[in-house]
Image 1 (spheres, rainbow, N blue to C red):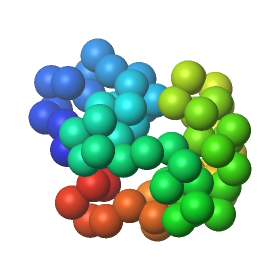
Image 2: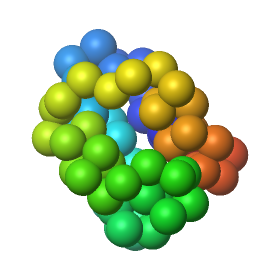
Image 3: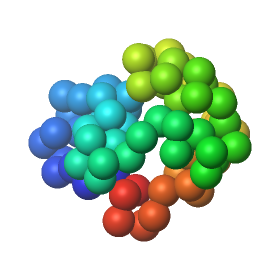
Length: 68
């Protein structure tokens, strides 16, 4: 995810994730399909719910290197 170090100090990971999705025009449905997670899991994470490490790994694997 493309953020400068100052932004990271004041931003929750879910906020950074939402910013990345917005910046790259990603849709939750597309990311769910590419990651193997459900749309509900993606939505919950976007809304600040905790995510299991293996689910986070799936999301990161579904993103391109520019999007990470």
